[in-house]
Image (tube, rainbow, N blue to C red; front, side, top):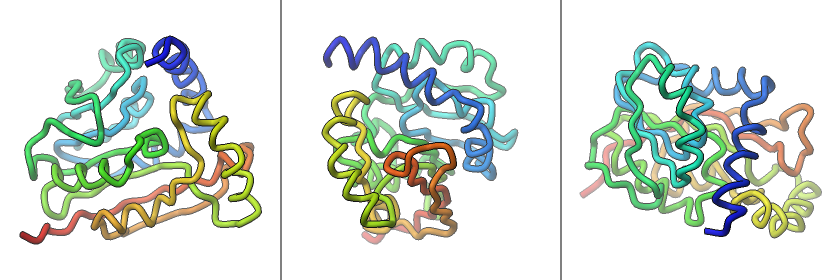
Length: 209
C-alpha cells in the first residue's frame, strides 16, 4: 500500500466518518444486532458506541493497522469484547455458520470484489442470520449516476479505493441475501453523487448443498 493509503486515508476516515451527522444513521443500522457479530470494514470503530446490549462479542475485519490503532479508545470503552478477526472481507478466516449477525457501514464501496465479500458474509452467518448494512452506492437517478461514473477514478485515488457506483441492493440479492428492510435516500447536506445511501437489513437463508 502507498504511504498515502496507509497513513493519510485512515486519519481522513477517522475524522470524516466520526461526524455527528452520521450518529443517528449508525444508531439505526445497529439497532437489532444481537449475539455474535462480524463487522466488515471496522474502520476506526465509530459503530462501537451503538452496539446494542444484546451483542455478546464482535469479530472486527479491518485491513488497515492504523485504523485499528486509532480505534483503540473506542475498543477499550466498548461494553462487549471486540477482537480483530481478519484483514480482508473477501476471504474471512472464520468458520462457516459461526455468527448470528453481520454489520457493514460504508465498507462495500472500498472492497475490490464486493460480491466475494458478501458471499463470505453469507458463509459465516448462521442460517437466518441478518446483515445490517449502511452503504453509499449507485444513485437511483441517471443524471447523478453520470457524475458518479465521471468521479469514480478520482474517488478511488483519494479515498482508499472507494467507488460511488456499487449497486448495493443488486449485490445483496446476487449473493443470495433476502432483503427484509431497505431505506434508499439521498443524505441531506451531502452531494448526491456521494450521498446515495442504502440502509437496511438482509437475511441469509439456508445455503443449498
